[in-house]
Image (cartoon, rainbow, N blue to C red; front, side):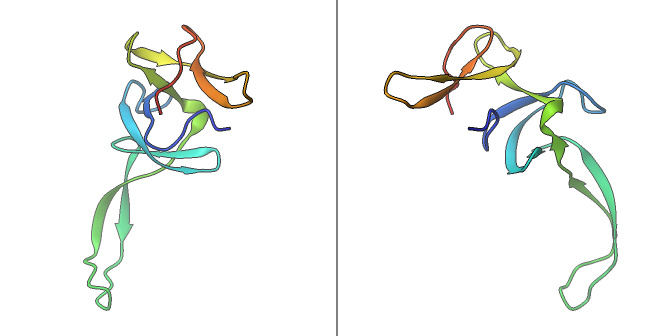
Length: 104
């Protein structure tokens, strides 16, 4: 079970965008695409067949999962996530600080 999933609200805890908050758009292995975080400028060639203009285009790049932490709405801080197994065998994600279930 993954500790961070798509549509989770996360905060960047390391790197150039430290302190930024965003929503997970896509999970690719151990990397995440977070909205509004890790914006880079890509030099793009024009492609008249596809109708793409050339130039310098800002785009979002992935960030490693170790550089983000899930946002805890009750404490309004980043928090670590653990996995707890219930009596019926289901697994739930819980916040390490409070033990609350992550609503996702």
